[in-house]
Length: 156
Image (cartoon, rainbow, N blue to C red; front, top):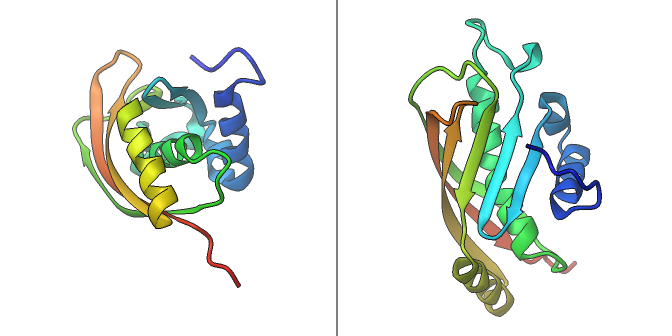
């Protein structure tokens, strides 16, 4: 379920993602959680998100999985200038997504603290995530393994 408070951390992240990457606005991506070590997004089941067999399109499942790492970086490195890149995302489709999908990963406080400390010390940090993709009934329809990199902006 989407955040109720329009001023919540999740609402702010969702607004930023939708503004910066119009794809997420088009598909109706909702940021449901970006705290307490749980990073979760939802994409609704609607005609714009379907493929030729009326299931959630594979590209949308991939994008909704990949963005979870962005949420981690935007949350953990809040207030610090950085740019982020995804190095790799491998997705395993297990069954058709015949409803809205939820993508979720865990990134606990200890991992977040290490990421921030390493970034502040080195100016660059990489990390990996395992993301699950579930349908409205909680059945796993896909899973993704991703690698990300955050760097300080280069000075000109």
